Figure (cartoon, rainbow, N blue to C red):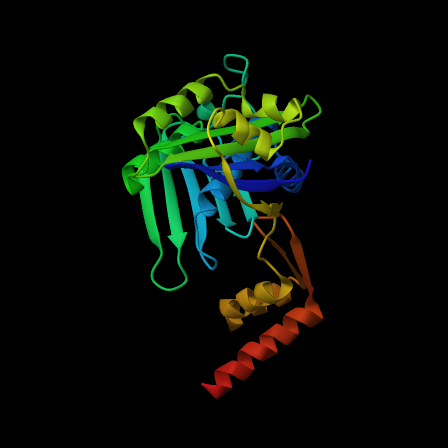
Length: 293
């Protein structure tokens, strides 16, 4: 099943359903995550994609979860084109199951969730709240309520097999608009209370439309566009070269003395290698720029 995000509405209510199995498995492989770590990262990546679905074309969003648990920090970027990237500070974190489920809350601990919106036109806006549970879905819903005054239900799930592979991941975001009627809200709340877990629905073969149909059962549904989703990092060799140049002459000379440099991207674990000749070329570029100042 492909990774996609589907939009839908019923009168006064909007919903977004995302299937993220492949991109979460991609993240697991890139960062060599253990089960609890990839469950936490996968939920955050899915949540960020659901929030980003409301953004305008050139906007993006960053979710940063900080806690006193062994994971320490999760950072995820997403945009409304379906691109997402992210990492967790300690990917080889795994805790014993809690109530037969992966203990994401225990791995995150007490802390805060920070959501930053980049508009591209003015300074980014960051809202932060204290974590409610550390289980991610409830924390994002609480953020939306207190920072954006938007009542929301968010459901997230990641299924990890004994061999560590991710075989199901996804989520739903359902929001009441100002003109929502109480009768419709109550019907949807009743539907949601009877929903299987996200991973159970995916394992049963439901796609994004099937999940929305269950949440909006008995209501007239209007579907919007479907967006393909993928793990996509913005790093490149050109960007790394510019970063190295920004370090200045002294740091580049230090790297030259070591005869090579190896730079790793936090978000995607891509390595960029620079040999002595390449570092020397960057040093000469720094010196050329200094002469023109």
